[in-house]
Length: 118
Length: 112
Image 1 (cartoon, rainbow over the protein chains, first blue to last red):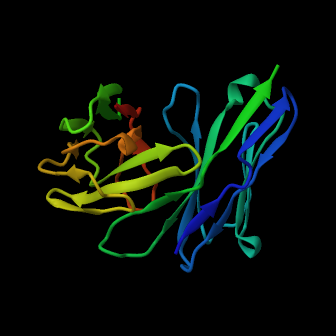
Image 2: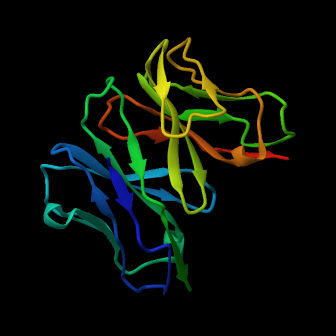
């Protein structure tokens, strides 16, 4: 069964520090997608990135970067030079390309609450 | 603006009083889903729908019903709410089963 584990329940850093959020996943499928979502204090879920299992290139978007390592089943998220506005709960999620009833199932980790202190 | 709209945003109700949380999307997406979010558990899928009149159970369907009579709407029905259904609920939609979901703003439900 697919499973996503975010071992870090809460992280607190001082502004401008770099911070890495860990995500480890389990799946029996060879084709799958990984996601990161951000949930700011206002409560909505904001899509950050999608990565498929065949693309292990790291991705950088401004201060955000993602490191996908299939060998360790990890999809870690790093924020460089963190800012107070980065404070949020971050969720890692997995979607398998299993064509069971044609449905998409997105399995989430428990989330990591990130607090950036000024 | 492309979006998923849920209503209400906040709801306090009493045990046993039937309620419906509405969800509507304007992106012509085929896939829709309901999730609940609880502390320490992340988000868990309640029900999903692949298209009109096609729905199926997710991981935690007990106590919930859904319907998909129109492509844009996917209401969540609690026939007899109980306190353990107090949670934050999200509706979501997707055009492609692998693209990930666009989420609504959430409905915070409290059952007393």
